Image (cartoon, rainbow, N blue to C red; front, side, top):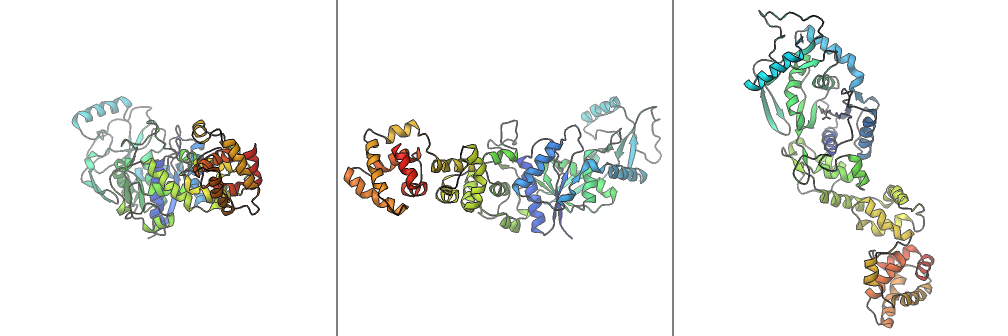
Length: 464
Ligand code: GLU
């Protein structure tokens, strides 16, 4: 059997980080088993679904690099209405479904009653049964179609994450599968899609656990082989509450891009939310797919930890080749006014500074002074600049001018004799030198920085 999983987002806004984690586990499960991972856009809620959100999902999947199979044939529910209608007709014909003509008022009364008695909401008044006389069809009322849930017994499944789940069938309502206007309802579409797509493993958020027994019973009626189910616990925010945009949490995947998180770091971090492989924190997606198994997914919710996300991101930045990093930084540097990054070559700059930043924005900031002197912070000036500094820097510029073979070692060799002559410690040279050349006191070793910036430019900066 080829494993087939799917990610089935509803395009009603942004791509949620919880959705991406669901997609990641679904993807990893399929890749681990050399199976297929499919994408399905659940856009039947016409009032809330937009083409723009579909694009946001496609772009988000592309950004994180979760590649799905049959990319030219992504399933859109709105394109499948004929098929849903066909299955509804079949279920009606085979007696698995029936028309219900209840009015809104009748249903409301039933709901009140059921709340009092703690029973299923719908009293099955239109469900055909042997020896039962059905009510008279009210004139001019369009019926809904309801699915005949089993009345007795238990629907159970061995959840791949949560273990056995068993729901007494009497708690299951005769679900509406088609509205009065003929449009199919959500749970029904999911069933037909999972069946038609040949999904073997439904891996999704545990907010869908309540849907599963309904879907299992419809699948049985349709004659499908049941898929396995794995329900993933939700992600909590740092305060331990359900992560949500409303509470001000960062949830849209595009926001993490804006924060300067690398897609591979994002996935590495999400993989560790609720799943572990020993003490491994930093790994590649190739390792992850090799190691991944649903049985190692924790059944309890996991918490966001932004500090850890940034740490992992820093590790991925260090592991990214400099030419790739340079390409990734172009836009962020352009926004900061730096368009020409040929001298010094951005790759060389990155080799020097890339272990100093945990996100791409901070990394871009670290590169700026190689191209343009920054405006120093007043506190740094107060701390490191004194009245002698100007004259001293000009004296040091003369030494620099005399260096023929401009490199870090040659520059470094100037420091000791100069400090001795001036009767100062290295800090009294290094810090003002950083300020006058770079405009910041926070740089890697100053000889290496000066070497990269170049002789002419260093002298120009000191002397102006
Ligand atoms: N469309 C559902 C959601 O976005 C997922 C349904 C499913 O995976 O079965 O939550």
